[in-house]
Image (cartoon, rainbow, N blue to C red; front, side, top):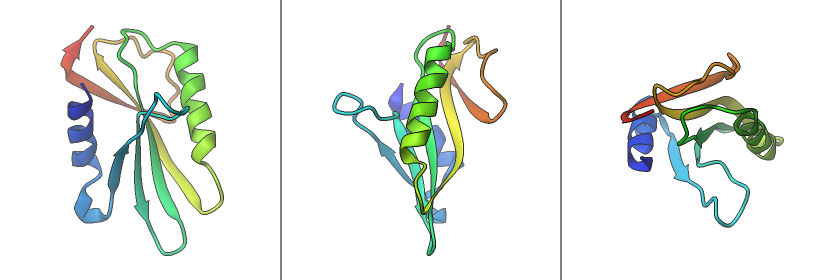
Length: 109
């Protein structure tokens, strides 16, 4: 699943535009699955990406995403967006409008 996520992120955030995609270690620390970042002269743009391999987004998933966002929202960093990655057919009805969804067709619910 993760190679498909990284490939889709790369299409949206191209290397040529300065974007770096990092898969973070969730085993060692409370991290999101991916951070996408681009350094500018005065700040760093970041995108927080959480992969949910379940067929329904729960309030716990949204709380986890919020916790990760706060962790990276420090001075000199601009959080451009937050993305939840789900399988095709997942119930995303509770996801707020300010969170982007990426639907993977490579897996289905």
